[in-house]
Image (cartoon, rainbow, N blue to C red; front, top):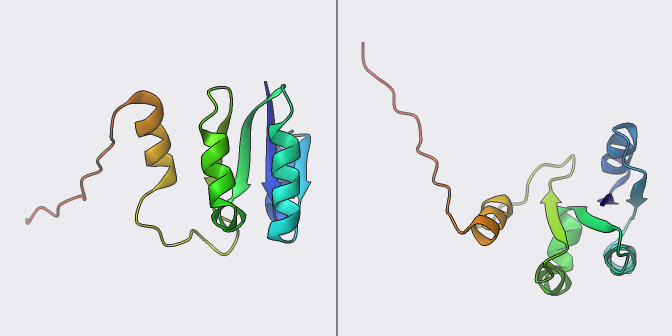
Length: 112
């Protein structure tokens, strides 16, 4: 199984340095859509990592591709930081894949 990365230059360079050869630098949503469709059509790619900002613009396509049992799409923030969201996409991926929901309790301060 191959891993593919679609994102801004900083993201792509980081993953290339980590050994991910299928790394695609895109500068706009149109390029990201073209590359995403191309990469998703490959039978050897099982994981696609994409910047959140591009994924947000391609939400209908991401939902459609996420239905496939042989492909996982993970959205990551770019250098500007994460997008404000109502739901965490990683948490949703775990819920959809494993059928469990992860709840994180905020730490409480103990008085001394």
